[in-house]
Amino acid sequence: MRSSVRVIIYVDDANDEVPVFTQQQYNHLGLRETAGIGTSVIVVRATDPDSGDGGAVAYSIVSGADHKFEVDISTGLLTTVDYLDYETKTSYLMNVSATDQAPPFHRVFCTVYVTLLNELDEAVAFFSAGYEATLQENIATGTEVVQVQARSPDNLNQLTYHFDPDTSPAALALFKIDSVTGRITVKGLLDREKGDYYTLTVVADNGGPKKDSNVVSITILDENDNSPVFDITSDTSVSVPENTAMGKKVAVVLAKDIDAGLNGLVRLI
Image (cartoon, rainbow, N blue to C red; front, side):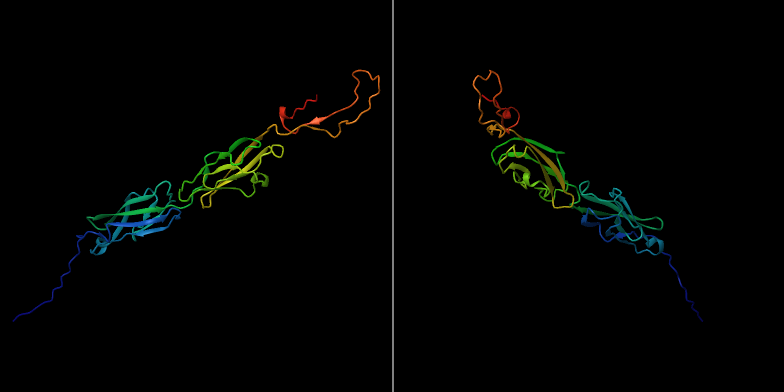
């Protein structure tokens, strides 16, 4: 005689497997530097064939995030936690770990490489707080007045220069600006008697939203280019009686010169 019995054997899983990342390096190239806080960057993923806690994986950033990124402990989703700035740092190479949740807590690593995309988010700025120039009237057209210069930290587009539309028409008729070099030159006849002081508002533009403007102040110096003229109130015809005493006033003659300073002094002889 014989008999049999059915024996069921349960095998407890031991945490003997190591998590494995799906990639050794994850890349996100061209993350916008203006990406807001909480922007999703990339998902890292590791698998562990063990069961229970031995197969559960927790993620952590080990280094390289500079307090700009964090990873979700359960999902492996990498997000931004601070504002980014291409002009401060252009790329990040982070070391990320995956650890299973049972002794002996196997831990493995991967890298995440993120590069930033430069955008026109920085303000254009002139090198000088203001510009001044002094010119002689009647100076030749084409004469350089001054060169304005600005910079754009983004360094993406060519800076261009132009006069603000609100600049006075009188000034715009006398001066022009090279849109690339920022050189301001004379294009009209400067006549101090018509205007001895001009202001030009120059705008520097890199195509972004943060332009800058600056003021160029120009003083016109006098040249002795005008002749004296007799005043219409001068006596032009007088009758002088004979025997008029010496030194007695017999007429008034006035003259004026519209030039400035010594150039406008008149001597009658």
